[in-house]
Image 1 (cartoon, helix red, strand yellow):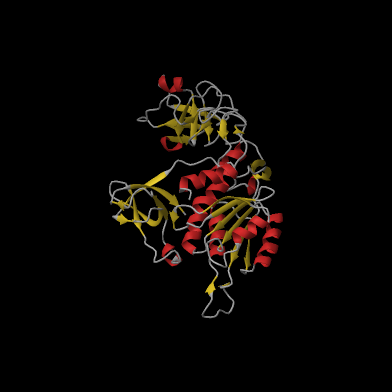
Image 2: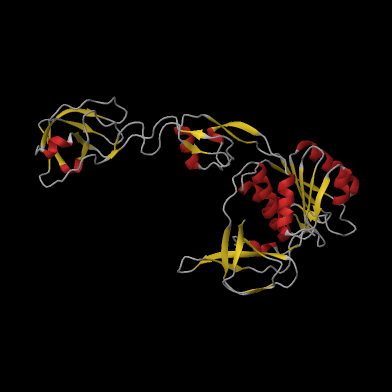
Amino acid sequence: MLTTAEARDAILGAMPAFDTEVVPVHAATGRILRQTVRAERDQPPFDRVMMDGIAIAFSDFDAGTREFPIQTTQHAGDEQQSLRPGSCVEIMTGASLPQGADCIVPVERISVSNGSAEIQADYAAKERQFIHPQASDHAKDAELLTPGTRISPMDIAVITSCGLTTVEVARSLVIRVISTGNELVPAGEPIEKHQIRMSNGPAVIAMLGKHGYANCVHDHIRDEPELLKERIARHLEEADVLVLSGGVSMGKADYLPEVLEGLGVEVVFHKVSQRPGKPMWFGIGPTQQAVFALPGNPVSTLVCCRHYVVSALDAASGLREAAPEFASLAQDVTFKPKLTCFLPVRLISNVGGQMLAMPVHTNTSGDFASLSGTDGCIELPLQESEFRAGTTARLLRW
C-alpha cells in the first residue's frame, strides 16, 4: 500500500492541467486567477487630500500667517486648482492636492468668517500633513495579483481598480458525485428499517462547494454491474471529475474497480495505509477524467474528499499551495495500527496564543454525526502509536 504522501504525490502527478476561461469580474469571486493583474496607474493617482479642511502653503504658516482668504473650494473629483500665495483652498477628503499647497489643516482646527479661514492659535501644523502621496500605495504597472490566487472580495476591489471588466480564471470544472449502494434512500422518501439515509453525496457536494467547486451534480446508482457501467460511462462523457462513494472495498458487491477498468479508467492506485479511508481508489479516464472512488463509510468519505480530492482540484486548477498549518494536541492520543491516522479535531487556543487540537473520537468510520462541530482533522504519522499532549501535527481544515 502507498503511504498518504505517496498517494497524494501519485494523484498530483497524474492530474491533468485544467483550462482557462474568461469571466466577468462580478462572477470571479472564489475562482482561481490565471493572469497577472497590473496597476492601471499610480495609486493614489495624485497627491490625495486625507481630511476636510483647507489647503495652504506651509511656508506661509511657518512665516506666522494664521488667517487665509478662501480662494475657492475644491471637492473630490474636481479639477486640480492652483493655490495663490497667502491664500487657502477649502478642500474635501479625496480631492487632489492643489498646485502650490503642501499642508492640510483640518476643518476642526479652523473658523470661517467673511470669506477667510483662521487657524487656531495653538495649532501646530506640519509640512505634508494629511496628504496621501501619489504612488505611495503602488506605481503604475506594479504587479498586484499573480496567477494562483483564489479571488477574494478584496481582490475584486484590486481588479476593478485596474480598469478590468473581465478576468482569466481556471475553468469551472464539471464534477459528478456518485453514491453507490442498494441500501441508500434519499431524504424525503419513505425508508425501511434495513435501509439508511443517503448522506455522503450531499456532504461531498457541500465540501466541494465550500472550496469553490460548485458545478456538481449528484447521482445514486444501485450495486448492479451493468447499471453501474452504463451510468458511469455517461458521466465520463460529460464530466472532468468523478467522485464516487462506496463499492471499492473487497466485498462481493464492491464492483467499482472492475467496472471502471472496463470503461478504460486506468488505475493509479488502490488502497492507502491510513485510517479512516484505507480502500481509497484513484484513476485517470480515457480522456483524462480524474476519477476518485472513495470508501463508503461517511467519515472515510469526507476525510478522503478533503485530503485528496480538494487538494488535487486545487493543484490542477493552478491554486498556489498554501503554507502548511499545524496544531498541538490538547491531550494524549494512542493509535496502534501501523497506519496513518486522520483524527477529527476541534480547535481551541490557550492564553499563549497556541492553537490546540482537541481530539474528537468517532465511534466508527460510520459515525458522521461526531464530525459536526469539528474544524478539520490532524494527520498522525504511521511510524508512531503514542502521541503525547503538546505533540505538533499537520492540520487539515474541512
